[in-house]
Length: 271
Ligand SMILES: NC(=O)c1ccc[n+]([C@@H]2O[C@H](COP(=O)([O-])OP(=O)(O)OC[C@H]3O[C@@H](n4cnc5c(N)ncnc54)[C@H](OP(=O)(O)O)[C@@H]3O)[C@@H](O)[C@H]2O)c1
Image 1: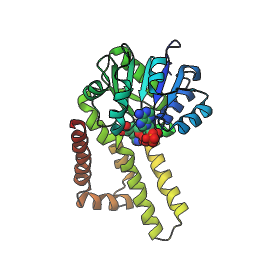
Image 2: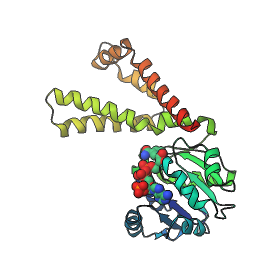
Image 3: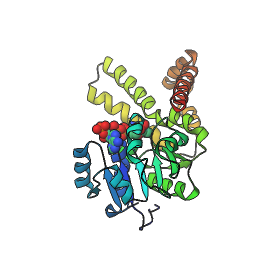
Image 4: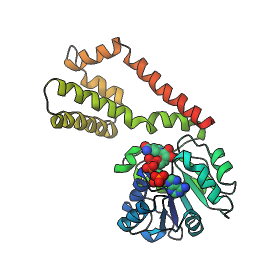
């Protein structure tokens, strides 16, 4: 695993679901030592709690944080960007690296709000970050800043570097993706419960099946499509289910659904 240069310090603005998950990945995988890290959150009690738990310093505010670090990981909600921009605009941030995970917020917009001298990398992780199993796409910034981005996000799973034109697609596929798989698990649970299984057993069957399929798909040399064919015996139960899905146009419906997520991401990015 890569490490953040020992001379560099990283600050986390926003310590909610994603900020705290990325922080845990960074510290847990020794990408940075706790003394290299400073955090801040508008909900100061949250920052102090996380600071105690992870043994990292808590800044007095965002200005104080930016002054103390070389790299800023921005993990606030997109709607809070305007308020942050008024705090940070006058600060000298030349040569500092900004890693932003704000959905629907292009590099151009970040630069407009936060100032032109930041070396900005935009990243799209997903909810898997909370268990170290995200996939993150990074884009923008100088080669050095992107290298720092890859290093930081590798604490939460694999990282892929892509051109920014793919970010809306990535948002629709892997950003929103966990919810698609949750829905499948939810529907499997609902069906088994309707047939008399307890919630606990139904959850175990659905979730462990998803985990097994995902782990196999990750480790196998076969593609998910090939694995599906391999487990679909002629005239068997799986074939009966999959034939029905095909007949009812599930593939088309699903493609259209992800297409809707893509359009929505484009709409949000254009605002
Ligand atoms: N969740 C996902 O799966 C996912 C995936 C990819 C990207 N993202 C992106 O990740 C970002 C964070 O999402 P999240 O779910 O972690 O949100 P969250 O749990 O609401 O965390 C954001 C934190 O930032 C704090 N905050 C707001 N304004 C601030 C400011 N000016 N300075 C310092 N802290 C401030 C908030 O405090 P208050 O609560 O007091 O406002 C909150 O504690 C979003 O931009 C989202 O688009 C999320």
